[in-house]
Amino acid sequence: MTTRTADVAIVGGGVIGTSIAYRLAQAGKKVVLAERYDFAAGATGSCDQMVSMQSKNPGIHLQLASDSADMFTTLGKELDYDIEYFRHGGMITIENDKEMAVMTDFVKRQRENGVEVDIISRDEASKRQKGLAKHLLGCTYCAKDGEVNPYKLNLGFAKAARREGAELLIDAEVTGFKMEGGRVKGIQTTKGDVDAEIVIIAAGAWSPLLGSQLGIKLPIKPRRGQIVITEPVAPFVTGDVLSAQYIVAKYHPETLKDSTQRGVQLGVGLALTQSAKGDILIGATREFVDYDLRNTREGIREILKNATRIVPGLKGINVIRVMSGVRPYTPDGLPLVGFVKGIDGLFMAAGHEGDGIALSAITGKIVSGLICEGKAYRDVSALDPNRFDLFAEKWSSN
Ligand SMILES: Cc1cc2nc3c(=O)[nH]c(=O)nc-3n(C[C@H](O)[C@H](O)[C@H](O)COP(=O)(O)OP(=O)(O)OC[C@H]3O[C@@H](n4cnc5c(N)ncnc54)[C@H](O)[C@@H]3O)c2cc1C
Image (cartoon, rainbow, N blue to C red; front, side, top):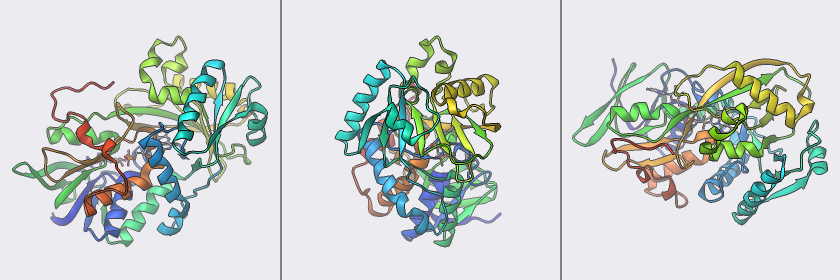
């Protein structure tokens, strides 16, 4: 089999790997990417489509999301591919006083970080979104929230990367790493070896399996999300609609197990969007069930129960299919992006949990900056993979 040579070898052809391949090739690096199946075969092909500000923690997380959203406004044109990006704004529904207190504080902190978010009344929210429940106290609203088609985004990055000279291999599983002393020197794939000075692991939730081949313990865990998809209907969902419980489920998994409600235990939080073709995507669960990608009747039932409680107007729209994917969860909610100390040449770009679509554009830019210029466009030390003890015998997930 052929041995290829590259400056950078990338493992994983999801939205993160292809975004990085594009930026590095654009910066003049010789890039070879190896994807074991096809583009969008992982979480990128089984997720929602939100490019959301409001679901991000105030601080670096939100700043990166905001910078990434700015890139999205011209990204389709730059990639010369219709990625179906729209900025229709987004809301988070508030059902009771406890949620109102949490969201009031969340909004205050987001505003302190420069993102325009407001709390609007139920009546105002109803002017934006039809079919909302009468019991809602109000919603948060952010005009900068948007949506993008994740498949098209992944393909757009892949095609643009190829145009810039990157070689993207599909059906090419990475089976091992080439090492010389304490340095990684390339990858072994089912389509031959790739010799490279830098190897980037961008394999989403599967990254720990690759890390373990190198003796490192990545604190990334697969977190299943089940989604329900309806028949295409006339425009119904405006932008994206989340629920306050979505924020709780995302950032406080430790609180879920104590609930008496099965939906809460399963991490169900409303995530509602409508594709350009008219299907409504109704999400989602947040479950730690290893790499089990099955949909469950219970998960689907709880998603629908939750969605129709908050948006009763959904009743009567037919469900046509379900899907599930694994988000790459990290204990502090931030991805691992940067060189790994202790294995020269090894670079991590994984762990974006439920934000990888929204953060894909900025991740490519950050990685290109770190590799080509030795620094990113802003301080991203919070993403440094070495904040975790990667060589520890055991790590705690929470
Ligand atoms: C239900 C659900 C809803 C979501 N909604 C949103 C949303 O609205 N907005 C948002 O921003 N994010 C959302 N996300 C999160 C988003 O999908 C992920 O963060 C993002 O897709 C991660 O991209 P990735 O490229 O890191 O991983 P993936 O897309 O999983 O790609 C990893 C790739 O690596 C490949 N791979 C694995 N092992 C190997 C190997 N040994 N050799 C070669 N290739 C390998 C896999 O086949 C896969 O294609 C959601 C996720 C889920 C599950």
